[in-house]
Image 1 (tube, rainbow, N blue to C red):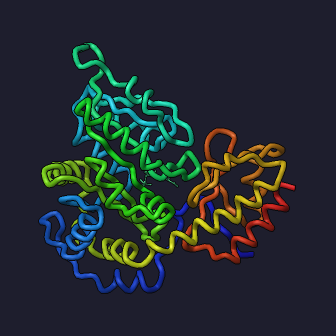
Image 2 (spheres, rainbow, N blue to C red):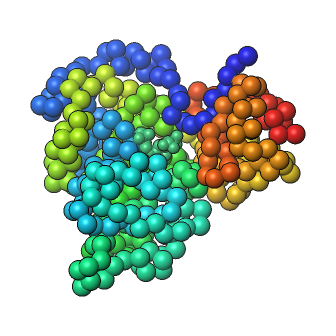
Length: 342
Ligand code: TLP
């Protein structure tokens, strides 16, 4: 029986062509900034995102956390949405690594209401309060079923950030999905933010690696923090080559992942034993609630029938479509779901 793994878009394996690119990569010592393939990837990404510089980092978590570390000082506060990855899935590292705290604001499908963001900002004169320093948003939003942040909201929150002299950070782990779904260029998205973190190891199919981007001065500071956190990776051009390959070849293919997610969503929608926030499913992530089974039972039954699902928010399951599942696999996944949930 073929296992269909829909736990995350991180489960992809490098294709033969990607492996060939990795095999052929020229390398050097990146701690001396001498790895030509890493340098090429960073230049390519800076250009793609329209920023002065980019830095290759091992993971999305390290990317976000380096950005927060550079933008803040201990005692500062970062406003983010209640379901943000930095708040829920990064092991409290804002506190542990930067000595800062997060102020979670409840959003609708991952989008924070502008008035609530403004309300969350601490008065500068109150020396006894945390100092608000950064506003962070996530696009697409993982725990909000891959929902896209509307450009209007991005811009309005950006205006608030500028009005209060705050930094504006984007967790763009899946910014590629947002761009493909809306037709808005990643550069246009990136222009709204001071710093961006984006991943090569999610839908783009690279085995590892993320990028952060921003002004030159920010990148220089980030380079130092990356080293101090053990992220200096030496001859990692073999990995960067996979990232370059992914950006150049797999970016446009993301629209197929969105179609695959729609096929599953349509089936879930027609099933009364499942509940889904339909409006939030806009890209490749589907979070849904099983009403008859518990999450644990559903995951176990899935495993037994060769369909791997993960957990979403409380009491919900998560399915993520990706490069390594075909449209036929999705059909097969739906027939296995029919058996699991009916
Ligand atoms: N998300 C992973 C898990 O951590 C949940 C996944 O399977 O979706 N930002 C966002 C929005 C993410 O979804 C992720 C990974 C990260 C950051 C962190 O990236 P990594 O896993 O490379 O540290």
